[in-house]
Length: 334
Image 1 (cartoon, rainbow, N blue to C red):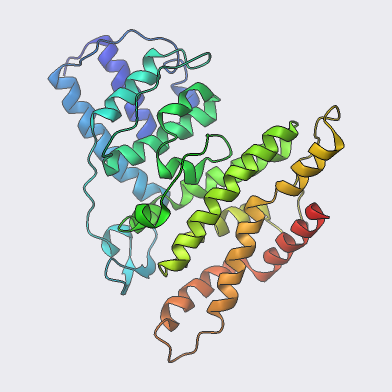
Image 2: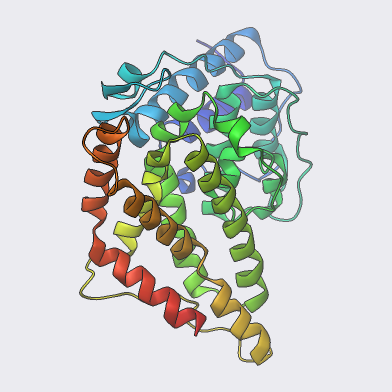
């Protein structure tokens, strides 16, 4: 099928975002003020819609949905299978916003500034996944001026609070009926928190550590409060996966706090940065509290089978890692 050159660039960018291509591959297209007509032809638009729809499904499959797991289904009953076997097929709708944000990536000089599209009034589930994938690309390429286009999305807030400005999220309302989304994006969420922790360790600015950690803490507190209230504490599994990667060997504890803060900053600011840098560790400690509560559930209790699934997941994370995290919090708060 023949499409215009600018339309071909749009399709190349969309395909790269949704098929897992590393953002550096399409970096020459992003933030380089590419010429693009305000409207695209029907052929290109049809290809774009198909690309985004199939790509969003593949993202959910590749980032966690492929695993055979036993988790609560929409009716609360435990179901065993892959994501699409535990949940009804979701409608992954893409609004005009998705086209606008792709257009922004091509047209706007994101290194210096960006005219970001406004948040959609009623985002489709496809818009939400695309926003997350766009945010991942912007973070990887350090194109911070583009964050304004995606920071409204709760998934972006959940994955990238270290980088993007905070926006209020009603977590209970967002998560209701979207548990499948957190399950299917498990690996991407874990990756994001691992990278944020590593970036924080190498950050020299106390102000950046303090601000980023405060955003992380607010997001994780709201998210964990919500999943605890709705009885879906298993949705915190991506945090355990991040913890496993950050502590590959509990016998060799890694460094967790900022490695080398700017010595020209005041001692007060540096101390505040170190003490405040434990947002992820505190969240892991709270998941340990979930685990302790699960261990008290008895065989004849209604929650017994669900708690056994969570306890099995905890065993992979291990009490040894939990001990490393607990000691790290104590050391950084000292």
